[in-house]
Length: 479
Image (cartoon, one colour):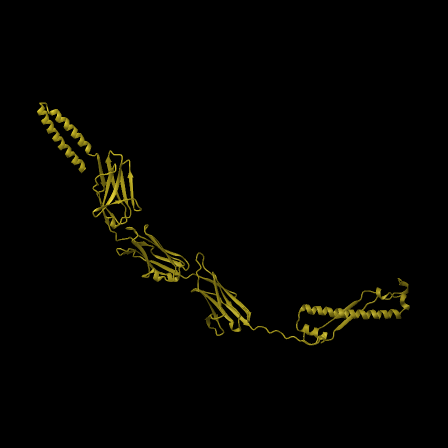
């Protein structure tokens, strides 16, 4: 615009000179000088009008005040006849003007139809305070800058921290989550969230505990989760929000009271009784169950034994192997001895105890001595000794039937011999008697009695009755 003004002034000066020269020439030539003057003035006025541009730039607002973390908006509007134009944004830093481009925080959007440009700056920080300028480029030629916008940033010292309030009651094994919400300021990168337990940093207070911290500074959210909570996790938890460069810290002022109680463990110990012998390996099981929807923790399992003196002592030392699995703990007693007898009991966690297992270890039986005498010692005493010693029901019955078979066979043999002699001596009565082979079936009765004492049994008594067909009269003979 300054160049255009100079151009206009020069045109007016040139027009005045040309008018004076035209007047002199007209007077010298005896002509009228007024038409010449009017023509020259018209030409110069036209050149001046063409030199003044028909465009303007307006930036709004002139001043703006915002809080940290908020969004800054400005607008630059262009008016003119040119169709080739663009708008650029700058920020004044000292004596320099730094051009601003689109980024994750800066968004510049130009409306071609309305010939305006919107400038947006997200999550403003204190360092964003200053003067912002816009400039219009027409046909690649820069036009004068706008008056600009003066930006003021208000510092925030209250982060408005709020966290889960009241008491949180859970049992062992549950996951406990405490939420913390706060107001985000600045660029977020300078902010931090920390947790305290009973006045100490949670990293120090929960060295043996298991916890997880999550946070989203841009969203103003953080949480602390106690995983597989135990009784030792009980306490007061506080969420702190601050900024490192300014050493500012803010908490809600209200702590979250976490109370973790012991789980109601159901412990079943089996078996209730064990009768073992020296040298055997015995196993005692202790199964653990918890209430529904409660996670089973890796509880510590300790085994105790009540000795003969009635005192309960922890099972330790060589030869004792403790195997713990999920929900089951087993005590293995290898190669037990007589002094391993006693009452064994398992203890789970802080309040779980089994009913106990009574273990009784007896001395291993000695092997019976065997007689290596000569094989001809006699069958009778051998049978009596075998039966008297309880060699087995099957063997006794087999020997009994064998003896009966021998006696019956001997009797039949004698009876046959006697029958043969009778037939030879009684030839006269051959017509009145049937042959012995055609007689009725013989009946034999035998009674045997044995004692269980390891002595020779009494002599057996055998009863036998032999029936023959009655004699027939001569008249009734069927021969």
